[in-house]
Length: 168
Image (cartoon, rainbow, N blue to C red; front, side, top):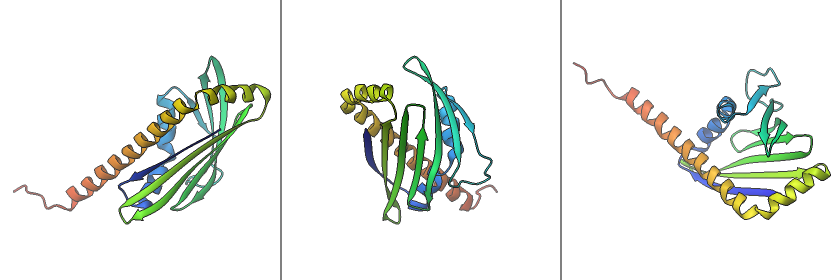
């Protein structure tokens, strides 16, 4: 099952990539949503092979998912692979510079069953695909808007630092 969405972001491609590479923000966001997150590697910087273990409740059952950073190609691609006992997934975030100050972000999420129980789960999700696709696109749009806001806020902070102080 595959979901995809594209959003244009009013920020330079390098800054969008840097924001997408701030993996600690994803960890904190997941924890705020009640997901247990544990880093499984001891890398000091963002690089291929970073791994997280996530535990959460879904449909009345405790789920365990391992997420690994599979690709990191500055400034155009970040790809994650995930694996759980029944489902494997892949999410790619592709960036394309539309202009010096505008970036297109393409997000693709694909999940595949590894056993019969997971196949049945994905079949049930396919029945609600239109609704799930709409929610996926909405979440990607919200995420893109948050990145634009972060970019605007950081740009304003830099502008304030450059301005001479009017104290006198």
